[in-house]
Image (tube, rainbow, N blue to C red):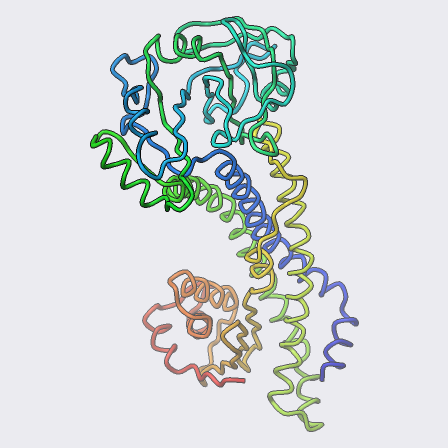
Length: 461
C-alpha cells in the first residue's frame, strides 16, 4: 500500500506541489517566528550574563538625575555593606539613563525605546565592561563610547561627539571605546562613560552617592545568606537587596512580556497563512478522494481492508506534511534571518553570526495535525495523541456546496476553544453535514450540528 501511495503522489506532482505550498507557508511563519524570538531571547540572556553582581543594592525609587530628591546610596552605606560578614568586595556605581549621543545627521543614535546610559567610568568584573581601544576618561570634556554606538555614529578615538545629558548639552572628545561583554552588544542601547567627577556633575547634579552597589560574595558564603546579612546591616526599607538570581528573574519577566507581544504579533500572520492553507489542503484532498472513488473501490474489491485504504490516503497527507514541514522550516530560517537584518537596520544588532534554532521551532514545523476528508466515507484525523477514523451518520443532504468550508469552520472553532483534535474533527464533520441539510452555502443550524456530533462514530486506527 505504501508503494501504491508513493506512485499516486508521483503521478500527480502538481497537486503534491500545490498542497505542500499551503503547508510550507504556514509552517514558515510559525518556525520563523519561534527562531527569531529564540535568537532575541539569547541576545538578552547575553546581556544578563555579562554584568550582574552576586548581589545588587539599589534604592526602591529609580534615580532621575534631574530630580534633586532622587534616592542615592551614601558613602556610609557603601562602607556598611563592605564590612558585612560574607562580603568580599562592594563597589559603588553611577549609572543613569538619559545621555543621548547625537549622530552626524543630528538625530540620537540607538533605538528610541532603548536606554541611553551615562556612566561613571569604573570597570570591574561586575560591570562586564572593558576598554577596547584608546584611554580612559580623565577630565571634563573626555568620554568613552561603547563600540556599537561609535560604529553607528561613525565615530572613532579622537573624534568630537555631541551629547545631550540631563544637565546640559555637551561637546566632548572620544578618548576611548569600551566593550560590554564578549560581543559588545547592548541590544540597541547606548553607553557613554565620563570620569567620576564629571559624571556626578552631569548625571547627579553634583550630589555625592551611588545609584547602586554591586557585591561579590566571599568564598564559603551563599548569596542568600549574604543578602540577608546586608539587609539586616542596612536596616533601610527604601533599599532593595537582590541576589543575581532575583535580578535575572525580574529582567527575564520583563523581557518575556515584550517578546510575547512580538511573538503574538508575528504568529497572527502564521495563523492567517495556516487558515488559508487549510482551505486549500482540505479542498484538494476532498477532490482527490472524490476522483479516486473508483480506485479505492477497486482496491477494496481486490482484497484491501478498510484500514489499508484509509492508510493509503492518510499516507499522502503525511508525506505532504513532512515535505511541507521540512521546506517550511528552511523557509522559516530565511524569514527569521530577514527579520534579524531588519532589526539591525534600526540599530538592534544581534551579537551572533547565526540564528538560535530552538527545539520548539523544529517540533512546531512537523507537529501539525493532519485532517484528511474522505467524502461520504468520513475522515481520518492524525495527531501526536493518535489516529482515528471518523464515520458520519447516515444522513443525506441535498445541498453539499460549502460543506467542506463548514467542516473547516467547525474544526477551527473547536480547536481554538481548546478541544482535542478528535473532538474538533467530530464537530467539523457535524457542521459539514448540517450545511448539506439547508440550501445556501455556509447556512447551517447550530442546534442540528450539535445534535449530529453525538452521531459521529470514532474508530481508533
